[in-house]
Image 1 (cartoon, rainbow, N blue to C red):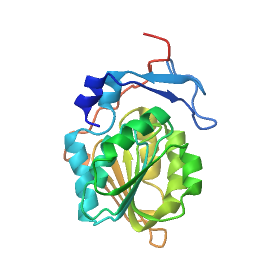
Image 2 (image 1 turned 135 degrees about the vertical axis):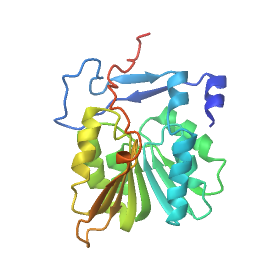
Image 3 (image 1 turned 180 degrees about the vertical axis):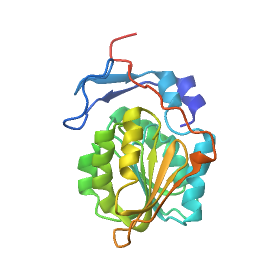
Image 4 (image 1 turned 135 degrees about the horizontal axis):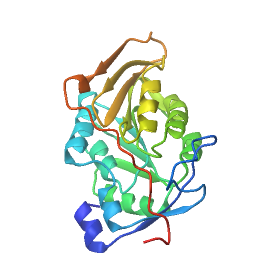
Length: 236
């Protein structure tokens, strides 16, 4: 569903916040475990990638001729639409914990010819049920260090050798940026690339750790943001 359609239909969604164990809890405005967060129309319309970043994801898929894509965090299906658009893609699975968002994502992806499946489960449960390998995995879910490292460990088992894993919003917070600096040290990522809001890794546990490319050394580096203070359910 396009952003203008979300605004025109005044859609909203509810998401239950479910952090990983032992993560930082003393941040002002951060939701509590199990709390329902309301995504208003404007917040929904801003979910997913913009056009430039969407085209970037599409070109990664095309350049590697990826046939099977897995996404963690469907949102409204915006990012998945770009990932599933190339002709080389035969199958796209995207996982979304919110039933409201999963419904919107399903409508968005219904416009693709690709075989798309929106899985309405928690990431851990869905990953346990998936028994296949993918050429590209895109992690765009809970933007916190503890969670992202956890999902990397779980999702990397679903990657083909020399498959690509993409991490969204690596400058979204200091916590996420610290996470990215830990990820680039992972032995099974033979290449890592910092391209700004995205971090890319090439996965192959059979090869020795090789090279990190920091393209932000040549381009404007994104400013690390302070995202806390999410709108809580029932608050205006």
